[in-house]
Length: 367
Image (cartoon, rainbow, N blue to C red):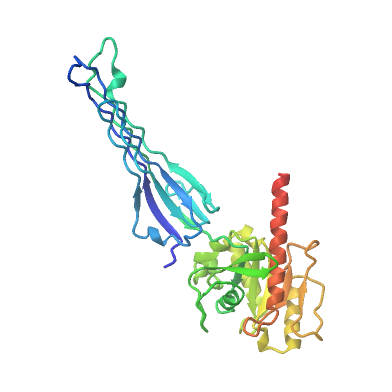
């Protein structure tokens, strides 16, 4: 089961009480106080583990508690510190305060560990309260209580390329062919009901991560269909691949403009990401018709170049170093089943992902 949104109550441990004790040994007359301190309560941490892919393990675990500290003992012995608890989450998990809605942590890196609740301090034993005027203190401190916090966890998958398209346009087929992902594939809409990640290996020690989400339909940003539940999973992607089905009853213009509108309504930042366009199922049309479709898409995006009709299944691609980021990096006709332009698609995506990462690192260094 894929679960990407859960609510939890977290509690750190209570500090153990200090001890009221007096030294009592043979041959020791009127031994003084020797009560030890209570142990500190256990802390609560979040820890990122890349081998965890969903939040489903929290389905039946609504309240997570660290252990309480143990009481102090005689002979100035301290109580044992309460055992801390690690809340294991997958990369891409946001921790949100359930009351205020504030994002407390955005956990991205494997092995990242952050403290969210500190355990209560243990109480002081009576040994700390002896003085010249009070040589027999009969009291000790109780331990301080732990902290409790209600949080929401939201998982947003981390990928380099996010696939965007209507249901049943070939997103699952593409990601199954070019990556290690194994999504369900069938000839009906909404086959994909949970997001899928796949690693695409293009050789030369280059690879990138692709995310497939359920198909988006008109009105998705208002709650129609399944897409709105999972659009957040491509919020972390730096590059979007619009997949337009040339064999659909919907025109390519209608598909593209509807998808753009839904992304804009969901997130203005997401709609401004760099993107490319893949015209899928090009094996269903002849070469001239395919090139006409490519040229129509270029015209829709106000690109002047035309694709020659004398070359089968041609495509257009911008100069990667002088590209217009508001326009598609490439418009390419593909067929996953017939393996048309798949290799070219992989290399083009790998090039743009590498360039975007390089630009991001350079920008961070300048800041």
